Image (cartoon, rainbow, N blue to C red; front, side):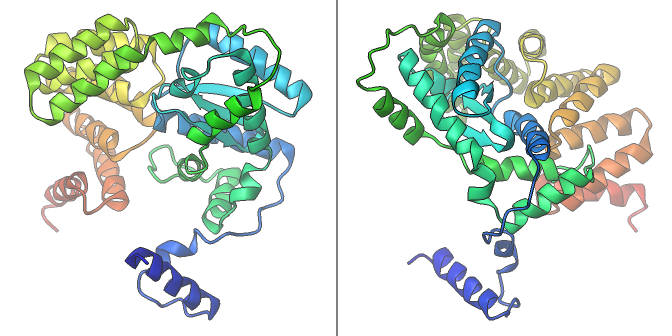
Length: 363
């Protein structure tokens, strides 16, 4: 048995005996299964919407393809009429996964759809998703989830809080993903059906993009190895093989930015933002570029938008820097304080604490 597993058992024994002082147990209390809250259909729908919004940011942002969206909405509507509520969005992520959420919301990844080979498989996949979403909260209810749901429904969130209730919920439901097993089940369920394969072209197209994303993965490996020239060359190959894919353009732009080639970085980051304006990392990258160039107004706009999509310590720190350089010290110090409270032991947490100390004369 692992040390972690043994520690969990000790904690659970302690909890059962009301001995909550066992070292290391505090972080496990919230993960204990709990009775689900009694929620109305409207409340489940509202929770599903806010969780979906944050979860999409964690999974690479929404994947924008009008023909794909239209085809999937049509398939989802068919499931709604036959099996239950189905409301679907696509995340720009290569890993195959389906995320069932309260209120019949489903998030499918681009990578999962790229594996689908027939309309029957797609139908079976959505049917499985609808079934999972129907009881996903009840099947995964914990104390932490209940606390976050109560806070979210009460409207206690702060737009700058990296640990806001809706963000915590997105993290928790992210763990309820159906990954390779969903693809296997959809294929098994579709076997033997007599329907004619009529998979929409917009879904078929996703499989064609795979070589470009494989090059993207290789480019990242080269960059990790410190081979800047080969990484940028491979990023360019990926962008050529799959034009107008914002994930690839953003990665290329950030590679240029790290290499100090600001003009090339700006061109690719701006295009990534144009194609996918609602992804926090693209906005953050462009905001950082503007900050490095001293364009504080533009940096402020991009970074504020990034924070509104998903506040993390990185974009909060950059926004605090912009505020500080712009002379808004009150706002800057408030943001540095949030970072220290959220992650005091990280590099950004220590840098924020140092800046707070400097602002207060070291007191």
